[in-house]
Length: 310
Image 1 (spheres, helix red, strand yellow):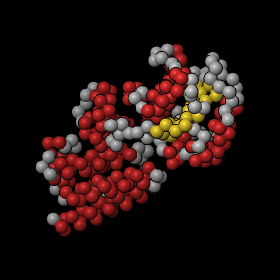
Image 2 (cartoon, one colour):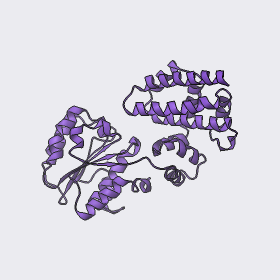
Image 3 (tube, helix red, strand yellow):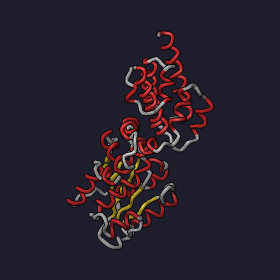
Image 4 (tube, helix red, strand yellow):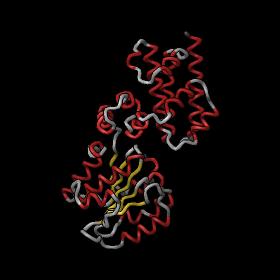
């Protein structure tokens, strides 16, 4: 995974700026893969300090124990107003080991507007030698006043080839890497979840079989949401393969073949488009269960329409 993270524009930019001594006092990394956001921030922090892999500094940053590189909040936690206050107080203290001190703020997309506003002055006018590295999965969750005070580094979704290569390196050539790389939308953690069989395909089959309200409520309680939509997309793709005589390219087994008998090709194409639209809505904080119910209704209408036309 490190190889993939170090290929990002964020890592390369921070490494280059650090090497030239032109690091921004505050940088925001936009990275859509929440599961690996903190890992990317650690790699960027190592680049900021010029810490070679295996060195004492690099190992301490990985362990979140380097005295001049402080992570907020604790892993899995939330940056509260109290923690933000402690961060601000800490930022007034001199670095311990070197000439600069880095504050790494993970999951900034979950930080409330109140807390973001609390940090504005520190982000705009940090003490000498103090730098900030923020990480978020989406820009729209960050206040415009914060965006105006940071250097924004957006990381594009990985290519299918990059995802497939990383899966083959990290998962021993497990079968299905190519298919899930195509379905994951460039999000590595989603590809991993699909490859490991997290139950998404069974849920996607139920969803496309016509289960609506109850299943949508069940899915709305799940923490992992995007992997389900990726499974729906991959299943629809394989259904289209079966419908168009290219079943040899399908990767999801008998479920796609069975569902393909119920869906005309036009309905499958429409369902793929509706799924993409639902994912965009969810990325902008639409209610997940409601978005899925709307998607289910839309797919059912398209299915009925194309069945009548067939």
